[in-house]
Image 1 (tube, rainbow, N blue to C red):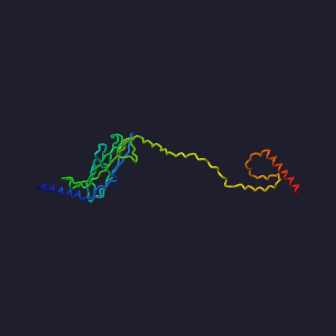
Image 2: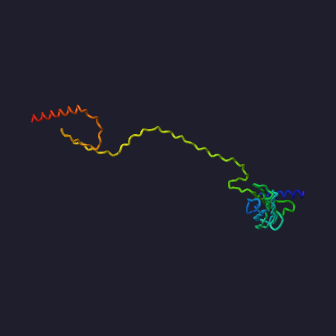
Length: 234
């Protein structure tokens, strides 16, 4: 009867602590990234700073799901430590990249906080935290790269240039360009009959067809007759 009552009390305290208990774990980083190239010095050491921000002294334990990770309290080989309120400690992470294949390798570092008074009979977990660790071996990630290495895609072909058909304009007959300036042509003076001095215009006139000699002779005879008649008349 007493054992059943004790188990019920521990179960109730465990549930109550998981519901209303404040946080205890404060770490410097929740995500750790490392790059390693063959030929560099190994193992890789990293100091993980942990602080107790809870209301009482508690036990901090660290573990991992990867065989290429080793961790211990600084200066000792223990994987746990009892931290008073607001105290902090360094856990040393020893990373062995020589045991890993090339590429992206991931692991989880688990940390939990236990109630010291409950360790005598049964564990009561006050807080838990998970830290992700990524090791890039002989691989330098780019800002656009994802966690999983995507397969190499075939080079994208550049789109073929689009040729736009230009409509052909039918040949147009060029119109003669008229000069905006007009040449002033002086008016010719009236010619008196019998005057043989023609007046020339600066603008060349179209060439007329030659007058037949017979017509000229007839005109000459008419003019001579007219002169004789005038003389007789006056």
